[in-house]
Length: 102
Image (cartoon, rainbow, N blue to C red):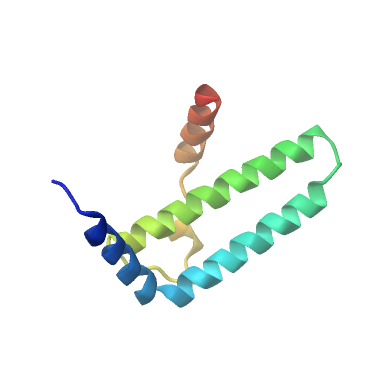
């Protein structure tokens, strides 16, 4: 099945427009968490650097899961963090895949 650029951009624009406030606040929260973690782990050694990377990976996976839920017209809510947090097996596979890719 082929899609035109116009269809893809239109679909993305409509989803973004429909969920703009939710996506905006998720973006702000992700930036704040990332900024705080980077500030706290700055120049503090190797282990904290690994912790910072691990938290960044979890944030990336949460953002991907939220995006996929929106694209699949699934309801995303603020109340249930368990709905958007990836299982540990996914986190492990993502880290392993990242290491193998690098």
